Length: 209
Image (cartoon, rainbow, N blue to C red; front, side, top):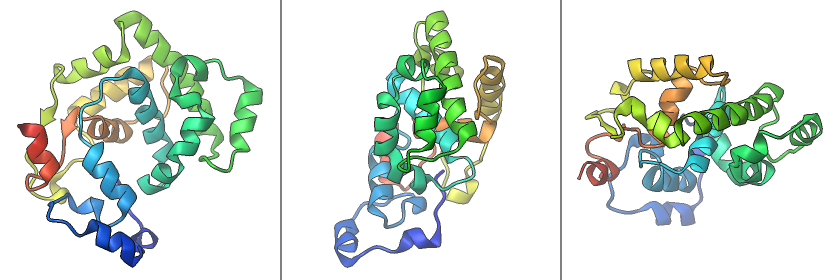
């Protein structure tokens, strides 16, 4: 699940007022509006749109070694820079485009990660061609139904699972980069393949009904 830094905790009084509500959330959401919105409306909710799945796969890879809030703050810049995360467009990026991305201050300018995004786009298209959609392929690992965990505390939530280990292994064989088991499990959490909201979180209650 997303990690946070002490510097991320500073919010103004207007934001605090916005956050004062009766909803019980996972503790990692804290009191930062961008985290609250992501927690409430995206994290753990099933995603089946291929472009959105590609976006999350790339963003989770971009997060490696960083905090998730860093990625969230740059998300719109990423979407603009990467053509809305359309895999068919990203797959065509050449060195000139990559150099342009590396000069873009709005995104995470890491050559290995940018190169991986292009490599992954090409591998993503191959998966779509073979299985009909990436959605059909990736959700098969959980029998097309979200894994509903029952964690009472955030400390209980694992960083990897046997399923994420297997997905990671299979994706690497297909040529994907930045798809280690930890990244893949974070991807599974983000796209709702697993419901890792703690049991007293309102999203957990919504997603198990």
